[in-house]
Length: 419
Ligand SMILES: Cc1ncc(COP(=O)(O)O)c(C=O)c1O
Image (cartoon, rainbow, N blue to C red; front, side, top):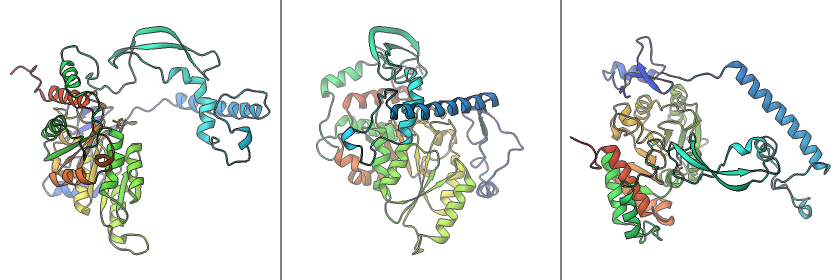
């Protein structure tokens, strides 16, 4: 799949690079002229466009649904139509509304019509096929009741079990069962107190070996890995440059940090370079002091669009402007690159070019939790300063074992690979 540095990504597949493809970015061209051309080759992505009629019909349906929504809300206000959604209590009618916002309107009037297609409880492992609990609604999707019937072997189009490792295989799950029996399920303490187990050490050593970095630290939740560690790295007087399509956990972490946040257009190097240049020239607003730190936040593969980060260009820019790079590989680690080591490997780059490597174990590894990896100093710093290390319980041992088993499987170290 990989064509490090020399390929174009089209609809998720790599195609050989057209000679006419040129760099859109001065930095890239400059880097190419500096003789490091393979490293800085541009990435060209193309995405299938929805047909015009589909776009028009979708917007029309949305518009009609919204109009009917207003009509129904009007009827609800008159008491003609019943509303089962959260509404203000009668005795609090003169309060500022707690529930009235657009999201609520959308949920009540548009989502409710199609709700039976979503949130379907499943009752088996999330493999390629899974079992779904049958449910029916007697009140137009406001509430559901289970019939007790199980719909077997439904095609799973919704889980992010990229490599199928979340599905149950009797023999390979044995080690997870053994760990469960030895350690139990919960650790009941934080990493900084009594919550660091030999299993965590084993996993962290394996993660750093897998990523080819000096050290790694694991956390019990992927979302919290971003939201609790970004504030440990940046704060007031620092600047975060964030891709506009970054995941909510990165956005929350950035906001919690208290740093100034500026958004650049998705994967757009001109937009990023302009922000970097302005940041270096003008410094902080009002005082014009230099920013204490500049941190660029990006993802490896963007979760909603499936686009890939333009890593070589971003690394070139971060070096030029002396900024730090934080990359969230939730969707790329384990599944991108010749041996699954993510976008850094995909582009044939050096892991040391990324200051903070972050990823989650929920997608390719069929488990839960996240990691931060990179230089030993960075990881040692987070062991002391991360809110997650101090205040959140550490990763469950059977989960750690599931990640170890999945990672060894990807690395060919699980004993099933023949020489
Ligand atoms: C890019 C990205 N980062 C972080 C997360 C949060 O990870 P988790 O679901 O493991 O908590 C997600 C979740 O989908 C994600 O897409």
